[in-house]
Image (cartoon, rainbow, N blue to C red; front, side, top):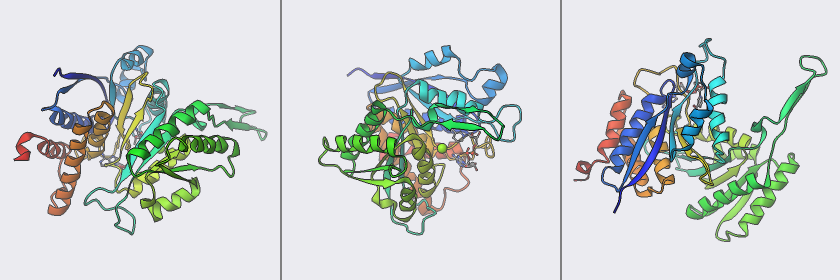
Length: 359
Ligand code: NAI
Ligand code: MG
Protein backbone atom coordinates (compact mmCIF):
# COMPACT_ATOMS: atom_id res chain seq x y z
CA UNK A 1 0.00 0.00 0.00
CA UNK A 2 1.44 3.36 -0.93
CA UNK A 3 2.04 5.84 1.84
CA UNK A 4 -0.36 8.78 1.83
CA UNK A 5 1.46 12.09 1.95
CA UNK A 6 -0.02 15.21 3.48
CA UNK A 7 1.54 18.59 3.09
CA UNK A 8 1.02 20.63 6.27
CA UNK A 9 1.64 24.36 6.71
CA UNK A 10 2.79 25.20 10.22
CA UNK A 11 2.23 28.68 11.67
CA UNK A 12 3.59 28.67 15.21
CA UNK A 13 2.96 32.41 15.60
CA UNK A 14 3.75 34.31 18.77
CA UNK A 15 4.37 33.64 22.45
CA UNK A 16 3.57 30.07 23.45
CA UNK A 17 2.28 29.29 19.93
CA UNK A 18 5.57 27.83 18.65
CA UNK A 19 6.17 26.03 21.96
CA UNK A 20 2.88 24.12 21.89
CA UNK A 21 2.97 23.49 18.14
CA UNK A 22 6.39 21.82 18.50
CA UNK A 23 4.81 19.30 20.89
CA UNK A 24 1.85 18.77 18.56
CA UNK A 25 4.27 17.87 15.77
CA UNK A 26 6.12 15.37 17.96
CA UNK A 27 2.84 13.72 18.85
CA UNK A 28 1.63 13.66 15.24
CA UNK A 29 4.82 11.98 14.08
CA UNK A 30 4.60 9.38 16.85
CA UNK A 31 0.95 8.64 16.05
CA UNK A 32 1.72 8.13 12.37
CA UNK A 33 5.02 6.25 12.77
CA UNK A 34 3.46 2.85 12.05
CA UNK A 35 0.75 4.08 9.67
CA UNK A 36 0.69 4.28 5.89
CA UNK A 37 0.49 8.07 6.08
CA UNK A 38 3.12 10.71 6.44
CA UNK A 39 3.04 14.44 7.09
CA UNK A 40 5.55 16.87 5.67
CA UNK A 41 5.73 20.31 7.25
CA UNK A 42 6.45 23.78 5.88
CA UNK A 43 7.04 26.42 8.53
CA UNK A 44 5.66 29.91 7.95
CA UNK A 45 7.03 32.75 9.99
CA UNK A 46 4.01 34.96 10.68
CA UNK A 47 2.75 36.94 13.63
CA UNK A 48 3.82 39.90 15.73
CA UNK A 49 7.58 39.31 15.60
CA UNK A 50 7.39 38.80 11.87
CA UNK A 51 5.40 42.02 11.46
CA UNK A 52 7.89 43.97 13.57
CA UNK A 53 10.75 42.63 11.47
CA UNK A 54 9.17 42.90 8.01
CA UNK A 55 5.91 44.86 8.15
CA UNK A 56 4.10 41.82 6.71
CA UNK A 57 0.88 40.58 8.26
CA UNK A 58 -0.17 38.29 5.39
CA UNK A 59 1.01 39.04 1.86
CA UNK A 60 -1.03 37.81 -1.10
CA UNK A 61 1.80 35.55 -2.21
CA UNK A 62 2.03 34.00 1.27
CA UNK A 63 -1.72 33.42 1.21
CA UNK A 64 -1.37 31.79 -2.22
CA UNK A 65 1.32 29.45 -0.89
CA UNK A 66 -0.83 28.56 2.10
CA UNK A 67 -3.68 27.65 -0.23
CA UNK A 68 -1.54 24.89 -1.69
CA UNK A 69 -1.30 22.90 1.57
CA UNK A 70 -3.55 20.08 2.73
CA UNK A 71 -4.06 21.66 6.15
CA UNK A 72 -2.69 24.37 8.44
CA UNK A 73 -1.50 23.71 11.98
CA UNK A 74 -1.70 27.00 13.83
CA UNK A 75 -0.35 27.98 17.26
CA UNK A 76 -1.47 31.44 18.35
CA UNK A 77 -0.81 35.03 17.43
CA UNK A 78 -1.08 38.31 19.26
CA UNK A 79 1.21 40.66 21.07
CA UNK A 80 1.43 41.35 24.73
CA UNK A 81 -1.28 44.01 25.27
CA UNK A 82 1.40 46.12 27.01
CA UNK A 83 3.55 46.09 23.87
CA UNK A 84 3.19 49.53 22.31
CA UNK A 85 5.22 48.70 19.21
CA UNK A 86 2.19 47.22 17.44
CA UNK A 87 -1.42 48.44 17.14
CA UNK A 88 -3.77 46.40 19.29
CA UNK A 89 -5.51 43.59 17.41
CA UNK A 90 -3.69 44.22 14.10
CA UNK A 91 -2.33 40.68 13.78
CA UNK A 92 -5.54 39.04 14.96
CA UNK A 93 -7.58 40.93 12.33
CA UNK A 94 -5.16 41.06 9.42
CA UNK A 95 -3.74 37.57 9.82
CA UNK A 96 -6.04 35.27 11.77
CA UNK A 97 -9.44 36.63 10.74
CA UNK A 98 -8.18 37.21 7.21
CA UNK A 99 -7.15 33.56 6.96
CA UNK A 100 -10.57 32.40 8.17
CA UNK A 101 -12.40 34.56 5.64
CA UNK A 102 -10.05 34.13 2.69
CA UNK A 103 -9.86 30.36 3.14
CA UNK A 104 -13.65 30.20 3.54
CA UNK A 105 -13.60 28.55 6.95
CA UNK A 106 -17.35 28.23 7.12
CA UNK A 107 -17.25 26.05 10.22
CA UNK A 108 -15.56 26.89 13.44
CA UNK A 109 -15.67 23.63 15.34
CA UNK A 110 -15.14 23.51 19.06
CA UNK A 111 -15.45 20.23 20.92
CA UNK A 112 -16.16 20.79 24.60
CA UNK A 113 -15.87 18.11 27.27
CA UNK A 114 -14.69 17.26 30.72
CA UNK A 115 -11.24 15.68 30.86
CA UNK A 116 -10.23 12.86 33.18
CA UNK A 117 -8.98 14.19 36.48
CA UNK A 118 -9.32 17.83 35.42
CA UNK A 119 -11.50 19.93 37.71
CA UNK A 120 -14.13 22.24 36.24
CA UNK A 121 -15.51 25.38 37.89
CA UNK A 122 -18.94 23.73 38.06
CA UNK A 123 -20.34 22.41 41.34
CA UNK A 124 -21.35 19.12 39.74
CA UNK A 125 -18.65 16.62 38.77
CA UNK A 126 -20.88 14.95 36.20
CA UNK A 127 -19.13 14.55 32.82
CA UNK A 128 -20.30 16.28 29.66
CA UNK A 129 -19.28 16.11 26.04
CA UNK A 130 -20.68 18.32 23.32
CA UNK A 131 -19.52 20.15 20.22
CA UNK A 132 -20.25 23.68 19.07
CA UNK A 133 -20.57 24.20 15.32
CA UNK A 134 -20.16 27.94 14.93
CA UNK A 135 -20.72 29.61 11.57
CA UNK A 136 -17.40 31.19 10.62
CA UNK A 137 -17.78 33.51 7.66
CA UNK A 138 -20.96 35.54 8.16
CA UNK A 139 -22.97 37.27 10.88
CA UNK A 140 -21.89 40.66 12.19
CA UNK A 141 -18.20 39.86 11.58
CA UNK A 142 -18.14 40.55 7.84
CA UNK A 143 -17.47 44.26 8.12
CA UNK A 144 -20.82 45.28 6.64
CA UNK A 145 -21.39 48.59 8.33
CA UNK A 146 -20.11 52.06 8.70
CA UNK A 147 -20.09 55.30 10.56
CA UNK A 148 -21.70 58.60 9.70
CA UNK A 149 -21.16 61.91 11.46
CA UNK A 150 -18.45 60.33 13.59
CA UNK A 151 -17.70 61.98 16.92
CA UNK A 152 -20.72 64.24 16.72
CA UNK A 153 -23.88 64.01 18.82
CA UNK A 154 -25.60 62.75 15.65
CA UNK A 155 -23.19 59.85 15.11
CA UNK A 156 -24.60 56.75 13.43
CA UNK A 157 -22.82 53.40 13.56
CA UNK A 158 -24.11 50.24 11.89
CA UNK A 159 -22.80 46.67 11.97
CA UNK A 160 -25.08 44.59 9.82
CA UNK A 161 -25.35 40.86 10.49
CA UNK A 162 -25.17 39.00 7.19
CA UNK A 163 -26.89 35.62 6.99
CA UNK A 164 -27.15 33.86 3.64
CA UNK A 165 -29.16 30.77 2.76
CA UNK A 166 -25.95 29.22 1.42
CA UNK A 167 -23.93 30.04 4.53
CA UNK A 168 -26.55 28.91 7.01
CA UNK A 169 -27.54 25.73 5.19
CA UNK A 170 -24.01 24.39 4.81
CA UNK A 171 -23.30 24.84 8.51
CA UNK A 172 -26.62 23.36 9.57
CA UNK A 173 -26.07 20.35 7.28
CA UNK A 174 -22.66 19.77 8.83
CA UNK A 175 -24.09 20.00 12.34
CA UNK A 176 -26.83 17.44 11.60
CA UNK A 177 -24.17 15.12 10.17
CA UNK A 178 -22.16 15.41 13.35
CA UNK A 179 -25.23 14.83 15.53
CA UNK A 180 -25.96 11.69 13.53
CA UNK A 181 -22.54 10.24 14.30
CA UNK A 182 -22.72 11.32 17.96
CA UNK A 183 -25.69 11.01 20.33
CA UNK A 184 -28.27 12.18 17.83
CA UNK A 185 -29.31 15.52 19.27
CA UNK A 186 -28.94 19.03 17.89
CA UNK A 187 -29.67 22.37 19.54
CA UNK A 188 -30.12 25.50 17.47
CA UNK A 189 -29.02 28.52 19.48
CA UNK A 190 -30.21 31.94 18.31
CA UNK A 191 -32.38 34.79 19.46
CA UNK A 192 -35.21 34.51 16.97
CA UNK A 193 -37.72 36.22 19.21
CA UNK A 194 -35.84 39.50 18.72
CA UNK A 195 -33.56 38.93 15.70
CA UNK A 196 -36.54 37.87 13.66
CA UNK A 197 -35.16 38.02 10.11
CA UNK A 198 -31.95 36.07 10.65
CA UNK A 199 -33.63 33.89 13.26
CA UNK A 200 -36.35 32.92 10.81
CA UNK A 201 -33.78 31.87 8.19
CA UNK A 202 -31.88 29.77 10.75
CA UNK A 203 -35.05 28.14 12.09
CA UNK A 204 -36.45 27.25 8.66
CA UNK A 205 -33.07 25.94 7.57
CA UNK A 206 -32.88 23.67 10.61
CA UNK A 207 -36.44 22.46 10.06
CA UNK A 208 -35.69 21.59 6.43
CA UNK A 209 -32.48 19.76 7.31
CA UNK A 210 -34.15 17.95 10.22
CA UNK A 211 -36.56 16.36 7.75
CA UNK A 212 -33.55 14.66 6.11
CA UNK A 213 -32.29 13.32 9.45
CA UNK A 214 -35.24 11.64 11.15
CA UNK A 215 -32.90 9.90 13.60
CA UNK A 216 -31.68 13.25 14.97
CA UNK A 217 -33.84 15.04 17.52
CA UNK A 218 -33.51 18.78 17.79
CA UNK A 219 -34.55 21.66 19.94
CA UNK A 220 -34.23 25.43 19.94
CA UNK A 221 -32.75 27.61 22.66
CA UNK A 222 -32.35 31.36 22.96
CA UNK A 223 -28.72 32.30 23.41
CA UNK A 224 -29.28 33.85 26.81
CA UNK A 225 -30.94 30.67 28.05
CA UNK A 226 -28.06 28.68 26.55
CA UNK A 227 -25.60 30.44 28.86
CA UNK A 228 -27.67 29.27 31.84
CA UNK A 229 -27.90 25.68 30.66
CA UNK A 230 -24.21 25.53 29.79
CA UNK A 231 -23.43 26.22 33.43
CA UNK A 232 -26.38 24.49 35.09
CA UNK A 233 -26.61 21.30 33.04
CA UNK A 234 -24.19 21.10 30.10
CA UNK A 235 -24.98 17.37 29.84
CA UNK A 236 -28.12 18.28 27.89
CA UNK A 237 -26.06 19.32 24.85
CA UNK A 238 -24.74 17.08 22.08
CA UNK A 239 -24.31 19.34 19.03
CA UNK A 240 -24.95 23.09 19.18
CA UNK A 241 -25.27 24.99 15.91
CA UNK A 242 -25.20 28.76 16.00
CA UNK A 243 -24.12 31.92 14.24
CA UNK A 244 -20.72 33.59 14.31
CA UNK A 245 -21.29 36.05 17.14
CA UNK A 246 -23.28 33.79 19.48
CA UNK A 247 -20.78 31.01 18.77
CA UNK A 248 -17.84 33.22 19.65
CA UNK A 249 -19.29 34.09 23.02
CA UNK A 250 -20.71 30.66 23.83
CA UNK A 251 -17.47 28.86 23.05
CA UNK A 252 -15.53 31.02 25.49
CA UNK A 253 -18.06 30.10 28.16
CA UNK A 254 -17.87 26.48 27.05
CA UNK A 255 -14.08 26.57 27.31
CA UNK A 256 -14.31 27.96 30.81
CA UNK A 257 -16.77 25.32 32.06
CA UNK A 258 -14.74 22.49 30.55
CA UNK A 259 -11.89 23.15 32.93
CA UNK A 260 -9.03 24.84 31.25
CA UNK A 261 -7.91 26.99 28.39
CA UNK A 262 -4.84 24.76 28.01
CA UNK A 263 -7.09 21.90 26.90
CA UNK A 264 -9.54 23.38 24.40
CA UNK A 265 -8.95 22.50 20.73
CA UNK A 266 -10.60 23.96 17.63
CA UNK A 267 -10.84 23.58 13.89
CA UNK A 268 -11.68 26.13 11.20
CA UNK A 269 -13.03 24.04 8.39
CA UNK A 270 -13.44 24.71 4.69
CA UNK A 271 -16.34 22.40 3.92
CA UNK A 272 -15.91 22.37 0.16
CA UNK A 273 -12.17 21.59 0.41
CA UNK A 274 -11.49 24.58 -1.87
CA UNK A 275 -8.76 25.70 0.55
CA UNK A 276 -6.99 24.14 3.52
CA UNK A 277 -8.70 23.92 6.89
CA UNK A 278 -6.89 25.18 9.95
CA UNK A 279 -6.41 23.55 13.35
CA UNK A 280 -5.52 25.57 16.41
CA UNK A 281 -5.84 25.68 20.17
CA UNK A 282 -8.54 28.06 21.41
CA UNK A 283 -6.06 29.89 23.63
CA UNK A 284 -3.93 32.85 22.58
CA UNK A 285 -0.22 33.55 22.70
CA UNK A 286 -0.16 33.87 26.53
CA UNK A 287 2.60 36.50 26.74
CA UNK A 288 2.59 36.13 30.53
CA UNK A 289 4.07 32.63 30.35
CA UNK A 290 5.77 32.69 26.93
CA UNK A 291 9.34 31.43 26.67
CA UNK A 292 9.20 29.63 30.00
CA UNK A 293 8.28 26.15 28.74
CA UNK A 294 5.36 25.96 31.13
CA UNK A 295 2.46 26.17 28.66
CA UNK A 296 0.16 23.17 28.48
CA UNK A 297 0.47 21.70 24.96
CA UNK A 298 -2.69 19.56 25.31
CA UNK A 299 -4.96 21.93 23.36
CA UNK A 300 -2.50 22.06 20.46
CA UNK A 301 -2.11 18.27 20.54
CA UNK A 302 -5.89 17.75 20.56
CA UNK A 303 -6.19 20.24 17.68
CA UNK A 304 -3.66 18.14 15.78
CA UNK A 305 -5.92 15.13 16.38
CA UNK A 306 -8.82 17.09 14.85
CA UNK A 307 -6.56 17.69 11.84
CA UNK A 308 -5.89 13.97 11.42
CA UNK A 309 -9.62 13.30 11.61
CA UNK A 310 -10.19 15.85 8.90
CA UNK A 311 -7.50 14.25 6.72
CA UNK A 312 -9.26 10.90 7.05
CA UNK A 313 -6.73 9.46 9.51
CA UNK A 314 -9.31 8.82 12.18
CA UNK A 315 -7.65 5.87 13.91
CA UNK A 316 -4.44 7.85 14.49
CA UNK A 317 -6.59 10.76 15.71
CA UNK A 318 -8.39 8.50 18.16
CA UNK A 319 -5.05 7.18 19.45
CA UNK A 320 -3.86 10.72 20.15
CA UNK A 321 -7.06 11.56 22.01
CA UNK A 322 -6.79 8.40 24.11
CA UNK A 323 -3.13 9.10 24.84
CA UNK A 324 -3.98 12.60 26.10
CA UNK A 325 -6.96 11.41 28.16
CA UNK A 326 -5.04 8.48 29.67
CA UNK A 327 -2.08 10.67 30.52
CA UNK A 328 -4.27 13.36 32.11
CA UNK A 329 -5.97 10.65 34.17
CA UNK A 330 -2.59 9.27 35.22
CA UNK A 331 -1.25 12.71 36.19
CA UNK A 332 -4.36 13.33 38.28
CA UNK A 333 -4.13 9.90 39.95
CA UNK A 334 -0.42 10.10 40.74
CA UNK A 335 -0.38 13.85 41.38
CA UNK A 336 2.74 14.10 39.18
CA UNK A 337 1.50 16.46 36.47
CA UNK A 338 2.43 19.68 38.20
CA UNK A 339 5.70 21.34 37.37
CA UNK A 340 6.27 19.45 34.14
CA UNK A 341 7.64 21.44 31.23
CA UNK A 342 5.82 21.83 27.93
CA UNK A 343 8.25 19.39 26.32
CA UNK A 344 7.94 16.87 29.16
CA UNK A 345 4.19 16.87 28.69
CA UNK A 346 4.60 16.34 24.96
CA UNK A 347 7.05 13.51 25.62
CA UNK A 348 4.59 11.83 27.97
CA UNK A 349 1.93 11.82 25.23
CA UNK A 350 4.48 10.51 22.74
CA UNK A 351 5.49 7.67 25.04
CA UNK A 352 1.89 6.46 25.07
CA UNK A 353 1.89 6.32 21.27
CA UNK A 354 5.17 4.50 20.68
CA UNK A 355 5.02 0.73 20.27
CA UNK A 356 7.07 0.17 23.45
CA UNK A 357 4.25 1.64 25.48
CA UNK A 358 1.90 -1.11 24.34
CA UNK A 359 3.83 -4.02 25.90
P1 NAI B 1 -4.52 33.82 26.24
O1 NAI B 1 -5.36 32.66 25.88
O2 NAI B 1 -3.26 33.99 25.50
O3 NAI B 1 -4.16 33.73 27.81
C1 NAI B 1 -5.15 33.81 28.83
C2 NAI B 1 -4.60 33.17 30.13
O4 NAI B 1 -4.56 31.74 29.97
C3 NAI B 1 -3.17 33.61 30.44
O5 NAI B 1 -3.03 33.72 31.84
C4 NAI B 1 -2.33 32.46 29.94
O6 NAI B 1 -1.11 32.29 30.62
C5 NAI B 1 -3.24 31.26 30.12
N1 NAI B 1 -3.00 30.22 29.10
C6 NAI B 1 -3.35 30.29 27.79
N2 NAI B 1 -2.96 29.18 27.14
C7 NAI B 1 -2.35 28.40 28.06
C8 NAI B 1 -1.72 27.12 27.99
N3 NAI B 1 -1.63 26.40 26.84
N4 NAI B 1 -1.20 26.60 29.13
C9 NAI B 1 -1.27 27.28 30.28
N5 NAI B 1 -1.87 28.50 30.41
C10 NAI B 1 -2.39 29.06 29.31
O7 NAI B 1 -5.43 35.12 26.11
P2 NAI B 1 -5.03 36.67 26.31
O8 NAI B 1 -4.05 36.81 27.42
O9 NAI B 1 -6.32 37.38 26.36
O10 NAI B 1 -4.35 37.10 24.95
C11 NAI B 1 -2.94 37.11 24.72
C12 NAI B 1 -2.69 37.44 23.26
O11 NAI B 1 -3.19 36.37 22.43
C13 NAI B 1 -3.41 38.71 22.79
O12 NAI B 1 -2.57 39.38 21.89
C14 NAI B 1 -4.65 38.16 22.10
O13 NAI B 1 -5.15 39.03 21.14
C15 NAI B 1 -4.12 36.89 21.48
N6 NAI B 1 -5.13 35.85 21.21
C16 NAI B 1 -4.92 35.07 20.11
C17 NAI B 1 -5.76 34.02 19.83
C18 NAI B 1 -5.43 33.16 18.67
O14 NAI B 1 -4.35 33.26 18.10
N7 NAI B 1 -6.31 32.28 18.27
C19 NAI B 1 -6.91 33.71 20.68
C20 NAI B 1 -6.99 34.54 21.87
C21 NAI B 1 -6.14 35.57 22.11
MG1 MG C 1 -13.57 34.59 21.08
